Image (cartoon, rainbow, N blue to C red; front, side, top):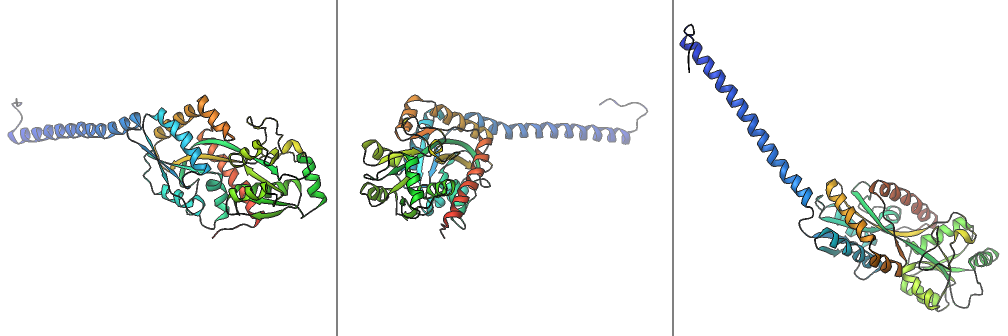
Length: 347
């Protein structure tokens, strides 16, 4: 170091210390920036490379049921778009609440996806005093998957040829017609309750422990009618074992084009259907959600999958996540009204 002749040794020491301090400060700032960059880079790479391992899909129903089959059909096809295996985990119990509760405790990293239906995401919110999860508070919406119509069908031998004729008979004989359901609080139960409220009719509810025994008694003539989801009742309508008079959604169903809607058959505005969707734990990175949405969208555009869904009476119903939140909220209100009207509760 070169000293000015007028600078004393003490002053020179102060200058040297000052320059050393400035050098340390600059080095520390540079090091901090390097560390920060190193910390951010893996996150960026993770988002870019997602998914880099198998994705777990929690299905809150027993294997082999309608919901389980649809989940595997759609998410199994989406796995090809993701480039990773999808591992299905069935956690059934409490109408789907146990599996949904499990998903709330999963890491919000994009590697746990919860499948659900209008039952778990909407009906249970009112049916159970404490379902143990909130579909809007605890989860980020990813995508609606399918919309599933119900068919209003009557037993063999019932002397009606159309839905308006059925309504006229019911109105002329209040409390004398019976309808079956898969159980209190199920879609088949509440869809009929919504019909009763919309059409102003009185029909006696006969609940069963599942859709299969209810359909058995409908086919056997012990029950007058049933409004059941298409995957369950559609094959019985096709075979002629029961007579399908109308579908519950606002528009006709492609797989049953000759069957009119309830709305065009005397109950204007009636639009009820089952649906399913997937969500992820709250806080999941937006990049992972976007990747899942893209994969699901591509899967639902696959003609082969669309045909498989149509064969089960389901139609693709992709919705952006913003719309899905509003949709779930409106469905909670709609099915909540039906639950209140029916008086159904589950402790």
